[in-house]
Structures are given as structure tokens and as C-alpha cells.
Image (tube, rainbow, N blue to C red; front, side):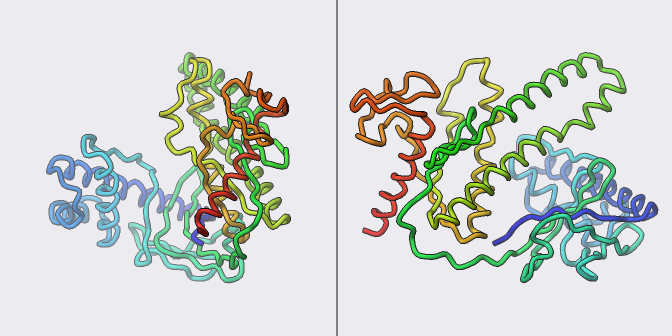
Length: 358
């Protein structure tokens, strides 16, 4: 399985200046290539190369392959929306392929710059880079964040062989108040994430209203703090769910929430929570952790899972008088609504497995 790993680089002060100059030149070249692509209405790399290749090498001092990568970067972004001319940040990510980046060892990487190659030490922080049997694949992206350099590399992690189709599935109901509730009744609340987002929103509003240099500096320092916090929460939840499924030898059943933002309408007070709901990221974390652990994952249709009683099967909108509670009008069962929905999701995965076998 391919996993993206972000490795920290430890360049010297002189190497830092060289890398910064290289990133500025590559992004300036990408901006020029994007300008020509937008003017000529072409996202074809070969056609664009004929138009700007010589200019990029002469004006920005790029090597042949660095010019090619800058052109490719402009084309990849421009083809997404040809109505807008792409604009790249001065220190945006720079893509390196095997011709301009090579590994000297597991702890050092050779990177091509404007003045030649430099060998930069690598600091391992992640889990997969030093795992036995892992190898790096494809290109890597050079990143600059908060005064530090990182290398985003793709690591090929060996997957264990999955066992036969499980007879039971751990159903997981995804939500905003409770980020995830499984069919055993364990709920992972999203209260902390929502509190952090609302506090940061109030702080951003005050700092933006001030508009001073110190306010802008504080905004820049905090811009990714909220994202890191939410990502860590999702990592913790996904690890817990995959570990529980592996220990009980069950599969994981998740709701297929594709297009839910377009289907649902919410009140103005809840719009911020609705649009910042990171259900896809949590699903992605669960999927790749489950693949590495050898746990199967199945996506099921979420329709009426929160309105159907898992005991008698009675489905009615009135079964859920409010967000938290479920009260069946058919058999009188009452309990947490998210737990009831998670049980239905797990059972729906069993029925899907039976249909596939038939």
C-alpha cells in the first residue's frame, strides 16, 4: 500500500538559503509557464514546453529537468479549471523526481539546486519510513513550513494478506456531535474539535479586525494549528476503530457519505460545523490503517439507518424525536440514536456481503 510520509530535513544555514532560492526560481518559472498556458489555452505539456522551455532555463537558471517539472506543475493545475490562470506562491511546494533527487542512504538525500547538488540529512519522525520492507516510490515534494524544510515522499508499505470475508462487521456511524459511534456503543465525541474551531474563529475575527503587523504574525503562526489538532483526533479515532476490529476479527462498515453536503441543508448557526466536518479524512485514515492491519472495510448506503429500529425493523422519521435519542414507535425500544444507526450500518454490510456472494 502506498502511504505519504512527511520527512523533516536538517540542512545547514547555507543549504537553507540555496533551497529557498531554488524554490523561488521554480515557482517563478511555474507562474511564467502558467501565464503562457492561459494565454494560449493549452494544458498539453509538450506544446507548452516548446513555448517556454528555453525561456525558463535562461531567465530562471533552472536545469533541464527542473524546467520540465515547473512546466508540468503549471499544466496539472491549469487543466483543473481552464477559466482561471494559476498563480503559485513564492515558496510553494516543488516536485522532485528521480533525476533530480536521489537517496544517498536512508538518512541523507541528494537534492539538485540552482548551484548544483547538495546532500541534506533526513530526520525520521513517522512510522513507515523505517519499517522493514518499505521502499520509496515516484517523485517527492519539497515543502517549506514555518522556517523548516520537509520532504513528502510516497512509501510502499507491505500489506498483510486479508483473511476470509468476516461474518460480523463493526458498524460505524459518522457525525458532527459524535465524530464516530460504533456498534458496540463506544462514541467518540467531536465536542473538543468544535470548541477549538469556534474559539479560533473568534480569535481570527478579532485579529483580522485589528490588522496590525503583530496580529498578522499571530494569524500566520496559528493558521495550521487547528488543522493539526483535528487531524490528530481523527488519527486517534481511526486507530481505535481498526484496533477493535482486528482484535475481534470483524470488518469495518462505514457510511458512504458521498455528496452529503449537497443533499443536506442546515441552519445558518450550524453551517460552519457542517462545512468543516472532516468525515472524508476520517474515512481515509480508517481505510489505510485497516488495509495495513488486514481488516476489510465496506461502504454501505446510509439511507434510513438513523430512522430504522435495529430490533423490529420499523422505519419512521418520528422514531428520532431529536438528534441524540431514538424511540421506536413500533416496539417501544429506546436508546442513543447514533448507536442504533451504527448497528444498522453493521447489519447492512452483512447483507451486502451476502448479495455479493450470491
